Length: 168
Image (cartoon, rainbow, N blue to C red; front, side, top):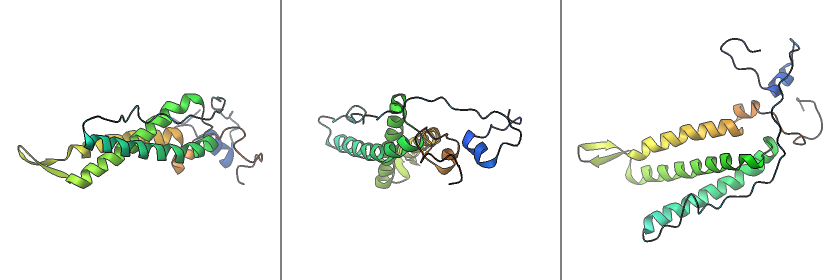
């Protein structure tokens, strides 16, 4: 049981730091690992007809999402033990990365401030990119893609070298 206002320590941290109270260590839900199939990036980022600018934006988003998928899925397979049910979460994470890239490019091209009807106004992409960054931070925590988030994850069975010593 955790102290009021504190989250319980992740199981791996309890193993590393010791368990002086001899409380049972909570095991996470285990799902069978699977090879995730890369999504068709044309669904979230379609090839738009007639609008050359948007077609280029979507093509870049597809490429950024594809690169991110191919970068993180092998790592997550090892560290988090991805299961088929995780496909949508990883896909949403990649879409967030692509949209942040898109917003940052808009800000770079048009600036933080834009001339509007009532004078200089904040570029709307700054608000959107902030929202995507907040969501990205949640996905990073869920998927264990930061050092602190990895400390909260329990590695999948078979994800290590067979040695149970957490200090190796």
